Length: 124
Image (cartoon, rainbow, N blue to C red; front, side, top):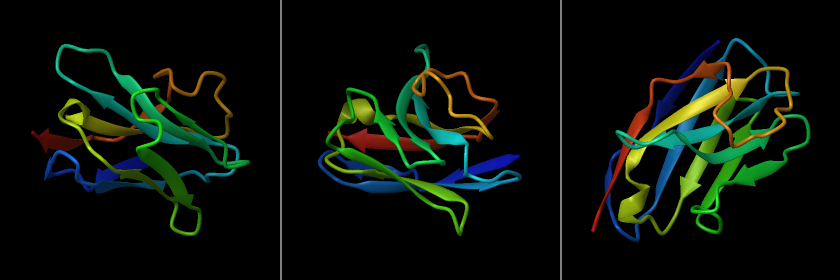
C-alpha cells in the first residue's frame, strides 16, 4: 500500500487549494480513506474521511462547510477541496487509509497506512 499526497503550498487567507492522494495497493471499495492534519506539538486532527463502499463522508467541526472530500475510483485518488482557508488551517496534511474496513470512528487517527504529508501554509 502506498499513499502519495500532493497539492500543498502557500496560499493567502480566503483562498482555495485542492489536495490529492494517489493510492495504490488496495481498492477503495470497502475501505476508509481520508485526511488528517498536524501542527508541531499538537495531536493529529481528523479533517475528512470518505468510506469507499457507500461514499459516506465525515468532517471535523473546524472544516465543515469549507472543505469537501471526494474520490475518483478509476484513478484510485482522493481529493480534498479546501475553500475559504484560514491561517489556523496551516498544518502538514496526511492521507490515511484502512483498506477493506469501514472504520468505526473515522476521525480518530487509527489507520493502517499513512502518506508522507504535504505542507499547507495559509498566510493572513
